[in-house]
Length: 302
Image (tube, rainbow, N blue to C red; front, top):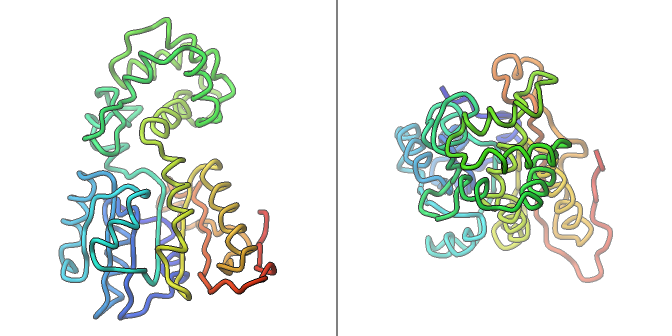
């Protein structure tokens, strides 16, 4: 079962109009997409995702509202061109939930994201791209591997882990990788000790932070004046990028920040859906920048 995170909060900040055009830039399994589609009549939802397999599941899960949804496989960096190809100059609202889907993490072992099920060391969101996690783990220098794990996973034991991975080569499967990490970085809390290493490799394989930068830079070109942007993050690296981009747009007079503080799941949502516990939502409304306008609301640093 797929439970979309911060669903009601996201819908409220999008302020959906029945005739509006909305972009779900990370359709995943279609939870947010379907909820938006149910609230429009003559409007349209563009459901986009890099992961073609997830997108196909989203298509099935949102079949009752398919007449209001257009499905496209696209990276963030390609979204301006993808929308232009659909004849859509700008949308009335953009939503992006940056968390990996349950399908990727828990259901599909062969995708290589799971810490608990053995599978090939893949981790590609788009399986047509050549670079895999196996390539990074087995052919990166120890220094590059340590830097990658430290920067993207914020893992303090990165050097020790990188040294162990290099010594254990070749590493071909997810459980082999997790086991090597666990031998040199014992569990200290509820997280598996390889969680941050897996996250770092996934980010690196898919250029996720660079793609997020591309999405944030394209917001003025994607969303009309008066349109809303809602982004849900699960990692501090991503949240900082979103916060700083929103503040920059506000200072330039191109947007008004709607969330003075990040919006977090309620205790009840966390109880029902534990993976939501680290989610943070930020929202803004695009506006017409005026010449000499330097008084945009920069929002809170929280």
